[in-house]
Length: 111
Length: 113
Image (cartoon, rainbow over all chains, first blue to last red; front, top):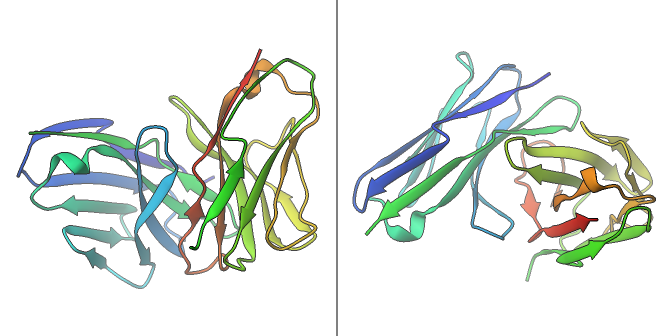
């Protein structure tokens, strides 16, 4: 069974600092990995999707890396802003259409 | 606007009273699924559907039913709700399973008393 772990569970940084969020998974036979953002009381917004053949994906201030062999992905957010405060989730599909999520990292960016 | 729409957004009800949470997507997606989110347990998949009339169990299907009679709709049915089904529920869709991102609804918060 695929298990996804996110460390740390919570993170508080001053505005302008770079954020590093970690995601690890136990079964490296994945098709892709997706990073989501969740605001309180809201649904999930897809940030980045990395295919298994890719090593990284970038969108604006966000950069996600993927190392399948070690079962790890890292989401980097450059020059953090208070608007980046949210919970960030990573998720991987298994071979049989099931999506497994990490518990998330709750980020607070202090102004 | 491309979206996944869930209704209701909030519901408080009592044990044993059947309820249905609707989910509709306007993106012609084949793949749809339901998740529940609980503190400390994260998001867990309840059921998923690969296409019309094709559904299968996720990790926590007990106490739930689904149907996929039309491509755009994927309702979640609680025949006899119990307090342990109090949770935040999300519907999601994607074009297919492979390399497409998942799109999520805004969630439905259910409280079963």
